[in-house]
Length: 188
Image (tube, rainbow, N blue to C red; front, side, top):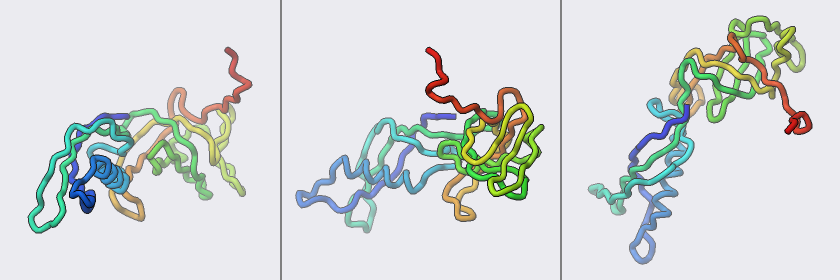
C-alpha cells in the first residue's frame, strides 16, 4: 500500500562554502542520500520519494564545528500489508521444487511456496517452472498476481539491508500468472 508520511531527520550537509553559507540544495541532497542508505523502516515501509519539505531548521551540536539541520518533510512510502494483492515478477524458481521468489517494486523477498500454488506441478530442468493445466506456466520473468499472507521485517540480516520478507499465495480468484499482452492484441 502506498502511504504518505511526515518524517524528520537531522542531516549534516558538510562544510559551508567560502562565503560561510550552506545551500538548501546541499541540505536536500544530503537528505536524499540518507534516505537512499536507509532504504526502509519498520514503521513506514520502503521510502519512494520526497513529496514536500515542510521546514529546515538549524540545530547546533556541541563540540561539532559545522551545523546540523533538522528537516521535516513528507515522503511517499510503500508498505506491504497482509491481505493486499500485489503483482510481481518471478526472479527465481528453486530447483528443489519448493517454490519461487518474486519481486514487486522495492520488495525483493516475496516467497511463493508450492503449497500455496494449488493445481501447479513442478517441472524440473535447466529452466525449472511450475505448470497448470488451465492457467499456464510460471517461470522466471513471468508476472504473477499474488496475495500477501504474511509480512516480516528483516532489518539488517543475512546480507539484506532494511528489507521486508513476504509470504505469498496464488490460492484464490484472479490470482496467478498474468497473460502477456502485445501491443497488436489491444483493440481500441
